Length: 160
Image 1 (tube, one colour):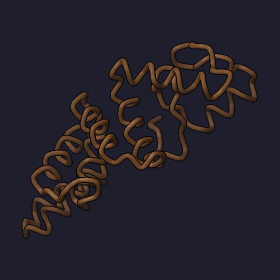
Image 2 (image 1 turned 30 degrees about the horizontal axis):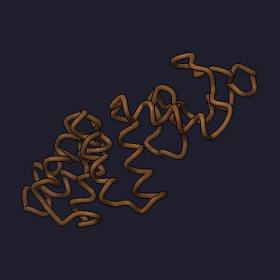
Image 3 (image 1 turned 90 degrees about the vertical axis):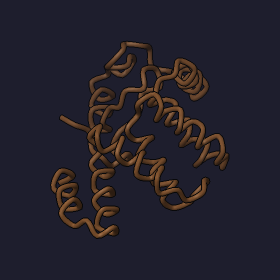
Image 4 (image 1 turned 60 degrees about the vertical axis):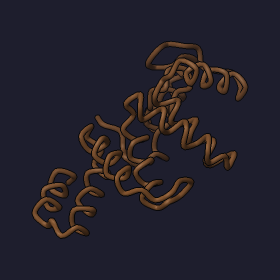
């Protein structure tokens, strides 16, 4: 089953950057099989320090999901917008769809970077081509704003 688009309903495993839904994670705790990652079988970290170490190892290995999450950490936790954009850009270059989507949003809103519609469309197209439904929806909105209603409807149908 695909994971929900709502990020709060899943957890990233720091050892391999795979996402597991919170229900499955809880089930592994109940069954007492939570001592290893269900994906890579890496031992579960004992504390926050070990988790951070595993996470940084994935960032250094250029794992696109870990790099993207490092960008979110810089933006949300540390308030370091410049580093956040650098990490998100790197994750997008590595092919991460969510990074492309978030960069499109940053460029659209002018948040942390200047407004740039060419970059908005580029990043939204990259995410949409990869199958990101909200990026596809946003492309439809851009087409609608530009008066291309038939194209907008096509984007919205694909996004649905």
